[in-house]
Amino acid sequence: MTATEYLVEALGGATVFRGRAVPTSIELRERIKRGLPYRSLESVRVRLQLSVPEAASVLHMPARTLARRRQTRKLDADESDRLYRVARVAAQAFAVFGTEEKAATWLRRPNRALSDEVPLLLLDTDVGVRQVEDVLGRIEHGVVS
Image (cartoon, rainbow, N blue to C red; front, side, top):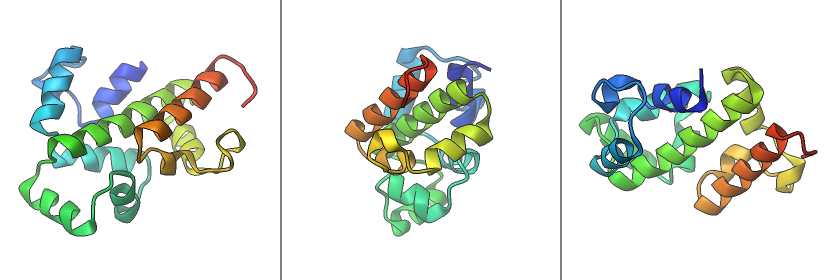
């Protein structure tokens, strides 16, 4: 499975993207702007072994907002964008480590290259996402990280 295929699956599969196994970047952007379904959040949460409070923290969503989104079954555009970033990093980690379990484990452990921060906790900002992607890129290319 490629990182792109993993990303689509992590966000809920082809049904989220009008039956397309690999949506174009335009289709992906439009879907995020319309809001991803709540099941996309649940799928990412389960794949990364996140508790509900952990998922809420990474997505900057208060627990009450998360409960409302569960009822309406849809995330807004900003929340969808943050979820996409988390799923994108998870897909890159999956590509680097080869299994979902190893990727989830790496994302949950403090990392020396990130000043002993937990990579998952850095995914709450774009800067943090870039830091984690940089370390994953170095690992992928065999640079000590």
